[in-house]
Amino acid sequence: MKRTLLMAVISALVICQPSHAEIKEEKKLYPLQAYLPIRISGYIKWESYGDSRQVFGFRDDQDLYYPENKDLDANCQDINANGQFQMAALQSRLHIEADGPNISQATSLGVIEADFFGKAGISNIVRLRHAYLQLLWERVAICAGQYWHPLYVPEVDVRTVSFNAGAPMETFSRNPQLRITYKPTTHTDFIFAASTEFDFPSDGPIGGSTTYMRNAIVPMLDAQIKTNWREHVFGVGLDYKRIVPRLQTNTGVKAHESLNSFSVIAYSALNWEKVSTHNKFMFVQNAVDQNMTGGYAAHCVDATDDHREYANLNGIAFWNDTEFNYHNKFIPGWFIGIIKNIGARETILQNVTNDDGNITDQRIFGLGTDIDYIFRISPRLTWKANNFKFGAEFEYTRAAYGTINNKGDVINTDPVGNFRVLLALFYYL
Image (cartoon, rainbow, N blue to C red):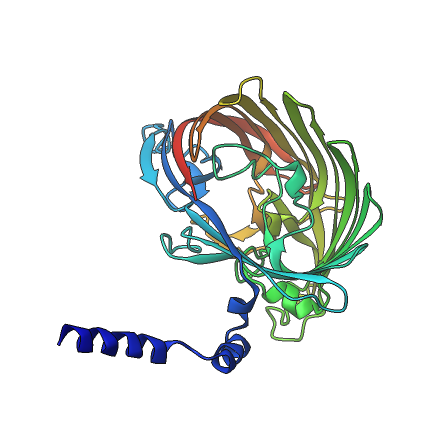
């Protein structure tokens, strides 16, 4: 009886094994299985943070940008002068790479990455970070999908424990794009890209929306030169963007309005054995889609049909991120950055408000348009042991609030500051 039962089990197992023809057909149906191995990486992050006052940020203020302005009550008490404390694990991330077949003498790669940061107004849900395919020849690489905007350079990144990674002093945006990299020598890259907006939109009359760029028809265009010498990286880049704020004026006639913006970056990463220092300088126009302060405003309004012309609000930013790796486990470092509003080339018009102070005709759009400058310094210490990493960071951010004048400058400033203490634990997969 036992022998009969054993033979039946063995026969069933043999019958259940797929034939070579079935395996070949399965590879056609599920091509991902045909090109293993698939590389899986990522991390789980627990984070605890406390602030000395109310701040402007995202997802329970885990992603901190700058402190909120003073809000005085009838007794001249600042309502926003109240601290806060929170814990979160939203930044936990999963990254998957899959090698594909050779295509026209090019190696292929597919990448998808997600975390639980969610989207505006909804946190703690899965969101798409990166999703792209790559074709790599000897001197040319093509990347298509969602990836970092070309103004963000991964080799010259900000390595803070905080999720803000230097924003709003640093660009921070992922965009659907088609990117071509040409490598004439082993030390030089020429990068050309066309991209659109999705998760990081521009601002305008209907709020943050991709509508303004979609209606402009022209995608963002970028060109960049990047070179490396030994372990060091240097580069410059140019970004062009066009938006259409409205298709219809307030009088009901078709609008013919657009705004062209340019941004320029220069960067370096000096990587020695024990010390590495990353630096970046930026001139930006209407870089709200890059999560940087600034925007644009109406330059003139036609009294007959409400047709408008617009002017960019310009800004400059600089930051330095340095780490010391004299010990394999304990790595101290710091981030220092500043972004400064430098006004507009043309005169701008103010928002129209009623007696209650509510805006009835908005003419200024953007992020932090009433801030003259934002300064941040954040020393940190990380400790690594196998797959674990502990990070501690002390962050001070100062924002100078004021009144924007008809030149786009912010005057009569009254700075406010916020202290944040942040602790984090990482477990890397």
